[in-house]
Amino acid sequence: MALLHRPQGVAVRHVSRETSTSWPGLAMAAAGALAAWCVHRVLPAVPMLTASVVLGIAVAHLPGLRTFARGTARPGLSLAGRRLMRIGIVLLGLGLGLDQVLRLGWGTVAMVAAVVAATFLGTLWLGRRLGLPGDQPLLIATGYSICGASAIGAVSEVSGSDEEDVAASVALVTLCGTLAIAVLPLLQGPLGLSDPAFGRWVGASVHDVGQVVATAQTAGPGALGEAVLVKLMRVALLAPLVAAVAFSVRARRRGVRTASGRRPAPVPLFVAGFLAAAALRATGALPDVALDWAHTAQEALLAAALFGLGSAVHLPTLARTGGRAAVLGLGAWVVVAGVSYAGVLLTV
Image (cartoon, rainbow, N blue to C red; front, top):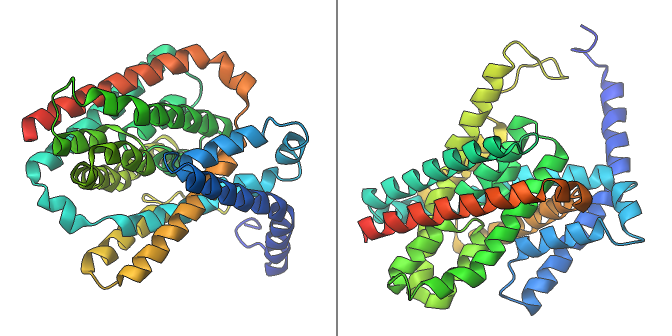
């Protein structure tokens, strides 16, 4: 019972201690997000979130910085990877134009749902067959099927995944999504896709929103518009997927309580916030300037969170499963690209 009624002074001291130990890492994550923004400004083809992960990995291995990143800054970097990720995902809901998504038609909605289901289940099955450790199969399947690193962060929050599993999964999904920026435009002609059809294919198969934009814009504004709408449709499936994972975890841990003495919530609070933000966007009550500011804040928060996750990557450890992870990445890529291509041909 003492655990359920912690004295207020103890709680205040706990929060104060957490803040004092976290600020060096939070400052480092903010600096990493700023550096990623600068990289994106200089090299527009490199999405800001991709740059954040790469910079985080680099910091974790550079002499002089890695000791700080793995020591003094670690609490704050881990905090950024959890808390800032949640807030960024809530703001991601404000980018969901549900009315625009529904205008694409129920055929496209069904196609996107089929792509997400086939990619998630196929990648999860293959990852487990390959013997990838921990929650990596689950996290990689989520990243490929929904929206890359952001989806991995969301699912890891409810699955209680190990930080190294999260970091390794983010690194793999980010690498494959970055390669898609260079590879997919080369396939538009051979596959006989018109610009709008190419945009839909990119939106249905590329992981991160920034990577979708970077890939689709090579075929013009028509392709870009279709790609973003289809991608938003995939993002909309993040909430039910996270809720399903949370329900599964809760079922496995039935009767288990958290450290605060409470049972895990059936639907995480940040998922409810994501849905509430999407509903608010659908009302049209928010002016464009507010949505622009929200998008900027979302990018900054996710960039800082992904920098924190990237800084947890340990390349020697990743290399030990590198072969199996590469096979899984290639297999998932084939699944998502093949199923989405077939879906586009059926719905155009």
